[in-house]
Length: 108
Length: 324
Image (cartoon, each protein chain N blue to C red):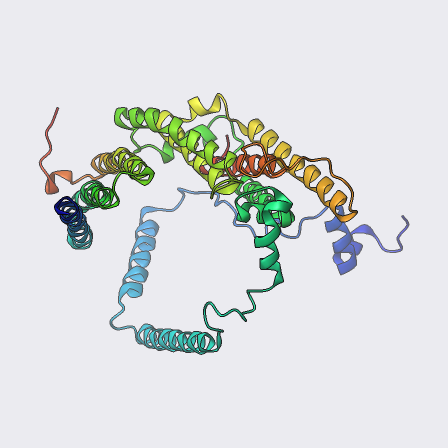
């Protein structure tokens, strides 16, 4: 009984963290002015938000075959999302001429 | 052919012009419709150029000066009110239509007819597929799916006509265009290559699994083919076109599409022919639930998946480079 309650609280807490992260992500994507800042907000939602909300779902569901699928979804998203963000940021750094206005550029 | 009037006068008459156009002697659009390349550039003096530039700037300033443009203000007012009226009318019409719809879940609804009941009742027995949806689209209504696959093929042909770049060398060749288009793209990115190396085999395996399990679980040719196509596109983006050209060229695309579509056509024609004449088709249905079951559905799923995967990849390559 007490174990069930702890599990419920843990799952709901992780889910709440995920939802809050998503809310922050949406806010950041619409409020930030510069691409790299916006992308930081978006990538945060795709990694931390997805990870914590799916972890909450896994804890709530218990150990089943669905859990394995959720783990695979998390692994796939954690592989795909940072790589795509990296590519976009690299393109931005290559193309933008006044990059120094927005962030500090280390010369090689 | 003997004519009473000479050739030149004959060409001026409408019937003569039509005949000449049909036989390819004269092209009425030539030098009339198409824009011609300007000859004699660089002959204008600097004053002319300056005046031309000033003219362009004044036109741009006039066009961008929206505050004092009464025509533009009027148009904007009209546009906004028209958009509002259109939206409100459409919403009202849809709401009225919704009010007349039969209630959801009512047993007397037109959707609950004998066709749906038959599909659900006899679907597994007739087609041998556990997944009724696949049984429907690849057995009862396979002709429709054949049309969809052909639509994909025709779409690729159309894009090929529009985008194809046959020039091999020099200015405007396919290689040069691709280099110019992807000038700023990160090339041979280590992070992308490593992640693609890990992900692409799993993506393609998953696509094959979805295609082969089309008659047992949700999925099938269209979704599995889209997954395989996405894996191929990821591979192309990570490693460049030189690597994918080794196993996928225009010839591969042509032959895969041709073979899949003609096999689909022949197999389904055979099964429709025998079915319509109440003949024994000789295709074993197998035990529902086994991977090798449900007769023609598995090969047809593979055909559709191949066509979809090739179409997705071909679209990407054509838009990127203008050729394989």
